[in-house]
Image (cartoon, rainbow, N blue to C red):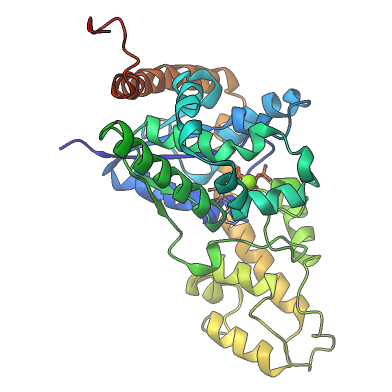
Length: 351
Ligand code: ATP
Ligand code: MG
């Protein structure tokens, strides 16, 4: 049996952060290493242009950075295919067909798009390409006939939109497309990682990130400056762990082994949380522990990144090679789509 297909991507708008890691990259690495799937990872340079049309240089300069972040996270050149969205014509032809199956009202209801429009202060001046990016994303996924898409929670409305397009296309033109499913992180705290400023989402566009490539000093400074429970003023005050970014990150990253190594007076996170909640545990101590946990997590990533940092020509070759392969795969889907709609005028003489 052919392997099921996985497709995901990231916008090259800057370096990848720990939200990307626990929200999606970690799962991609697991799926890659299971050997049970064929995995494609897309650097979404066209999607990045939808809100950066006048700054293409930012996108150009982020492409290999994102590739290095992938390698840092544990994705491997021999096990996963890496390609550039702009090099795959099917990905911009399919949206032309799919656009006719989606209403404006439906696009405007997308909660993630709504939040993103607000965050960017676009109002009605939102670029059309930005509001329609869920359609383009549906093309990215379906062009590969991908079954699984490992993403963070903010992407669920996009997968839903893609499923609706598949349903509409297949019932209008015949069964061609595969309906995709999102794979969320196993750990609920990782579905949407908050920013170090306490903002609801760590995001490249919000300047509230811990980047996978942050050096030890920057990392430590960021952790020590993190937002915590604003009512936990004196050490003896009871504190909240629920909406506290420091504890959310500990939920996402700490393991019992970290306690053994860095904070042996507590067995696990439950014990640490209980102490914070009843009072008597200071923020500085918790932050120092978190800084150690994060350093332990990011150090091997920095090492993997360093191996490829001065091999940029090689990375570019891989992108070209895998993009060519992705073109082949997606052109097949494109032919099927065109035939289903009846646009294959010259391969059937019955016009
Ligand atoms: P931008 O601000 O440019 O949109 P971003 O930080 O939102 O960048 P994307 O490239 O849009 O990053 O997202 C890539 C993937 O990472 C998606 O699967 C998304 O769900 C996931 N992701 C991004 N931010 C987080 C987060 N804070 N927590 C969990 N997952 C996240
Ligand atoms: Mg985003």
